[in-house]
Length: 373
Image 1 (tube, rainbow, N blue to C red):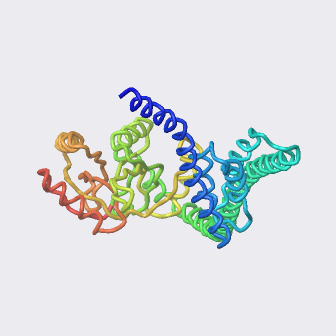
Image 2: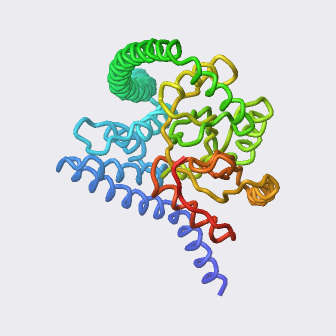
Image 3: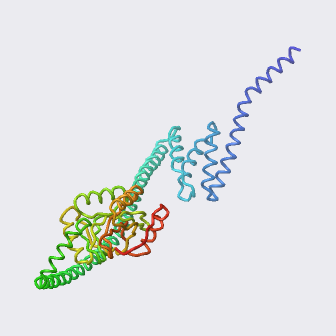
């Protein structure tokens, strides 16, 4: 019995001594299998797959005799020129691992040379990336500048065309102004002759003018299609206040509404009533010297008559009613009856435009109609 136990103990010691050798033999066998597979892949030019197999040996079997070669081949194949997937960082990692092994001076020198080369490549790639980024920025700036130049050139051509058009229009206006001045000179010359021949008629005209001074100095039996536009704006209240201000200074200001497609409602401030363009132009010149530098003559032959009467109280009441609803009316002597005054609203170039406001006034309880001013 004691002999049998002794034999078992001896066998156990023998097995314990052989077990590490057996385990080492198994790892060596597995590493050799991977190495053979890697070598076959390398021969078939599958360098990327071969590098992965060598890396497996280097990671899993560091205690085997194949470790040093596996590390070296994993480093070199990752930067092989024919490798379709070159990985410099992986190669640099395995080379540094390789330099940590027991190497001959020649092996260390060769590995160090590869490390220096890869580090230099990394530096060059970083510079190249920065150069590419800078180039992309410069290209983007250049393209933008080219677009700006094209846009600027087109805008310059448009402005030159507009300038030429404005110069042409100015030339035409000067020609018209010269012709109008000649006409005015001829009219003034004719009037001077007539006044010299008919002093009695002149006295009658002066009496008539004084008689109508309370009604903006307008003469009956005449139309007054011309007026002067001094400004315009979208603020109705401000336009009416400006008209009232002008009246306090002795001018006959009034406001007229207009709808402009694409711009909306606008309110134009007009001054005065004139039979001819020449009379209106002369008055506009005086207004420009005062506080309306942009005054110009317009033809607005139509207005809306809201009332006609010889009684001031009746007209004042109607005018107050209109003002309470946002309309600034003005008075013009009736063409047929000297003792009657027409209460008008607005000024329009056509009957059609005047008819729009007429319908609105009808809805508000007035009795308007389109008339010639």
